[in-house]
Structures are given as C-alpha cells and as structure tokens.
Image (cartoon, rainbow, N blue to C red):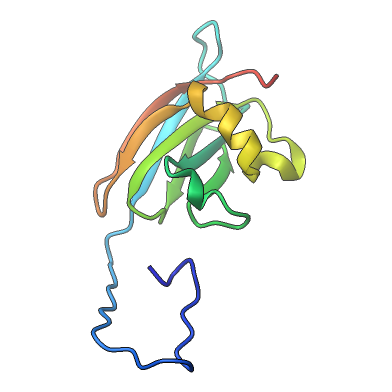
Length: 130
C-alpha cells in the first residue's frame, strides 16, 4: 500500500500496479454517555486501527473528533479495518496520537469494523483519563 509509504519509481521499473479508487468511504458515527448513563456532548473520540504498526504520527489510521452540540460524532474516510474507539472527556494536547498513549487506551476501547460503504455506529461511555 503506497498510500502510507512512498514508492521510489526512479530506481526501478514498476509493472502490474493496480490503482483503486472508491466513492464509498467508511463512516463511523456514534454517541456517548457519562458513567451514570446520562447522554453528554462533552467528549472527544479517538479512533485508531488495531494494527499498532500503523500508529505513526499523522497516520490516516489514527483520527480524533469531538462531539457536536447534539452529543453525536462522525468520522468519514478512514481506511477499511478493525478499529479501537474510545470517548474521553478531553484530548491531552498533542499526545492523543502517540503510540504509547494509544497502547494504554487500547484495552478500554470498543472494537469496531469499518468496511467500505458500510456505515458503523457505536454507543460509548466516556472514559476517565489516568
């Protein structure tokens, strides 16, 4: 997959490359509740692929978003795969996409499969940090 790692075409001949495009992006939507079960709009979501080798800085496999005023969230266009999803009361500055931090979050996250053109919806509980 050359989307994530550059391919140097100046040093070798390349044959048999297939370029695939899709007009059916993945879509993840959801809501979150507090520990006592109340719906909330005060949270952010971190979504990161199960494969930790793809937890690189600025990776398209690691994304975050915050809830809307209605208490919902939506992320579109993640690559197909199995993801960890976790709702947090806030994001820790610049560290939310660091591999060590994601490793700590992984056991508490909800797993979801995102497939091309198949929307996925999750209901989360906001997890405390620390």
